[in-house]
Image (cartoon, rainbow, N blue to C red; front, side, top):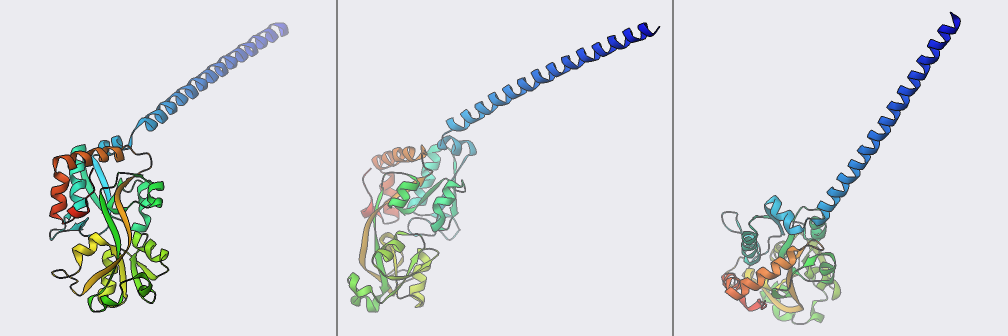
Length: 286
């Protein structure tokens, strides 16, 4: 009887052992299959991400978000709050060519590269000077407008400030992170950075700054007879420069916009918009 019970116990132990081995083998096989599937899925996901272009990203979401500041005649709001201007109108036309809506978003100009890389905006299109910093950090288009940084002062003292040496004792207002700020620094001038170029003009008009350094195209549009700043004028130019549009580094949208610029220049659209905002003299042939 004891031998019979011992045999039964041995058979039960062997059966349990074989069952456990089978379960472990099945579990290991399942884990391996899951790992392989996960690896394949991850690879496919990475490939899809790598193959998706910036242009396709914008087309898929249906919106081109344009980073701007309030900068007449490039980007500014009309009486209905709609963004208009030479750059704004061109951006709308470009968006139409892509089949997407265009959304304008005001940004801190000093943070434009961070905004772009963080996907908050898709491009910077706002009379942006093609500085070394910009060209190194963004995928930029061909230049499309000439520009300069000019000194703005009250008209009644303009004759006193006709060369760089005469500017030494003035306190300037400049837009933070702008070509105007760079020009002030390069010339050893005293300056305070403000939010944008419009604010720099307000500082001079209010008497809280002696002068401002802004883009010549903005100066031509916003100061002098028939404007809100009739008592201001601009004197000397501190730099000569060119405007371009910036996208994320490596973006294929830059070349797409270059093609759009060339077509718009050839069919006269660019010239028509330039004449509307009185910047035709600064237009660069595409």
